[in-house]
Image 1 (cartoon, helix red, strand yellow):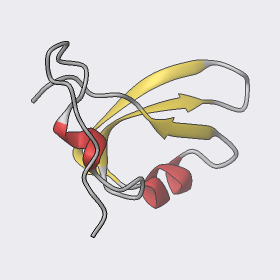
Image 2 (cartoon, helix red, strand yellow):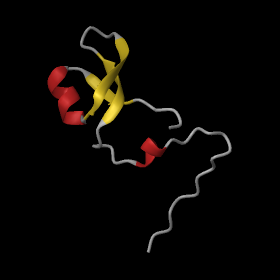
Image 3 (tube, rainbow, N blue to C red):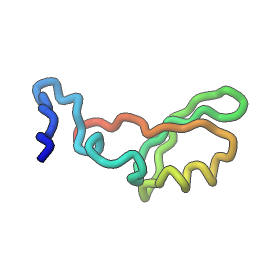
Image 4 (cartoon, rainbow, N blue to C red):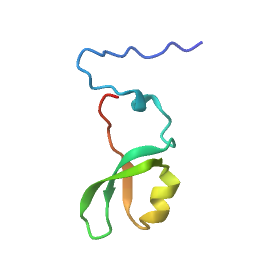
Amino acid sequence: MTPLPLIDFADGATAISDWESPEAPRRRWLIRHRDGSVASHSFTPPASRAEVASWYPGAQFEPEQQGPP
């Protein structure tokens, strides 16, 4: 059995969403568009990596850190 990592909640920096898989739908994505501009995009309902890739072809993207619930 692998032990769970120690999480320090004192600074409030760790959100529940940080425990999710990288493929889990996310509400906020940081997207670098083909023209080099970078923007934070918010989706309701949350969007999966595959959905974001289909909506912004050629862009680079990553889940944006979300604050505490």
